[in-house]
Image (cartoon, rainbow over all chains, first blue to last red; front, top):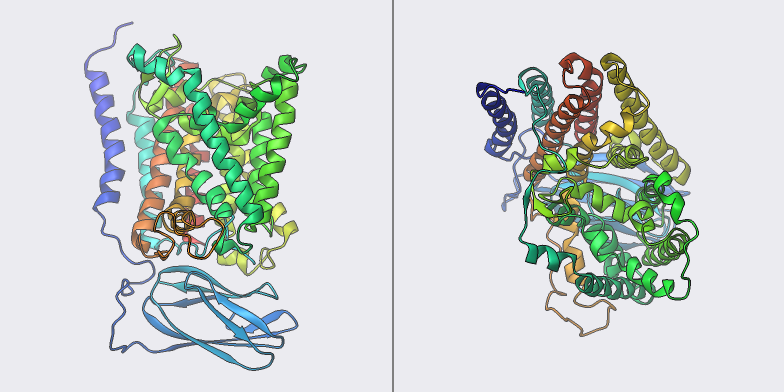
Length: 136
Length: 434
């Protein structure tokens, strides 16, 4: 069968366009922090950013308070207050903050949420996920 | 210890920004219609005969049985070491090498390795070496004749079992779980290989099936004249042999990755999957696989009807065209795990048994850097992977249709292409985290 020379060239051009357009568009777009225009990574040292207070209480293996997905902007100073009715250990994944809890006494963890991502906060012994901290 | 999605890890990705999600969706539609309307009207990707042969010396080396035995021995040594560490190393996951090597370095690393080098696990599979040893005692393989009929179905089952462990089983990240799974997997696979012969591994070892499937998109391939060749990855994919169960493998991969995405959404975490329950997880994973299967079968069936093709062969015929889409999903879901939590492997490898004062490679004091790749870069990689997978999938489906019927009308492909668009929208939607 005969193939006219114009056709493969057009097809090739179409292939190139289809292959290059998304790549170029992907490559050309500057990475933006997810969410709505939040500051990307650089936590201001003087800390004009308001402290984010997150409070969770655990009773009979069930968490209440600021549970579920808790969103904070990158660089926010966080005060996480956890009260458990049993002695346990609280763990903020990713930030790798671990702290012992005594039964009935609120424990406050201070840290700056400067690593973007979604991180679980859980009680080790009870195996309860208190909340998922969404930074960014 | 409860864990995040996909087996192990300290973090999951942020939802992709709405702008990127919309851009991706728009690009997917635009590209799809350009492919259907502008592209070639005769098959032109090349097939099993295409490619530039590598020098005979290179092929002799690559095919040398001695080289394979050496590589298999190295892999076997590493695997035995990982199992020993799983049982005898530190008990807590953050300090035990085994789960990180298995879920991140091996399972996720298999993707870039196969994409760049070809079907690597078929070459270095340590079970093949053990099987050769056992074969000396058991010379006959009574089931060898039945293997071709089984096709890739056993591989699909093996992959499902592994993916269930990785995505659903609550104790998945415990070192002991990894050790038990590796031993159990090896025993079952070896027993089946003794029954069916060494070819079993190509049909039923999930990791080998997975690696070989991804390698269809690598630049290396074996031409139909037996020569190793460099060729277009699309030619490699389109010449994937039609094997029973290939569609099942692709559907299991796509469906389970979709479940991985689902399990990261607020909807899942605050709803059905909130308790990290086995039942909810298993049902969720089965539901996603069933959904993907139903969409795929409907798309191929309708396309076959429109084109007047026998509808029964359609699912296997088009299975290879979904490989890039499954690969795009995989990259989107595992890229950050590999780049970020994957560092843990190299930190822990320096002191696998957690003994004080041991630091073999001087990396044990290194700290996991979760900001090594920015959230923006991760989102871009995710969206690009899904779109590029979509483009290649639609392109392959177009070529496949032309190969089946020279005068295929573009409109006949519409049902399957719409299913592919749905997969892409679904993938982007899960990343966006509806």
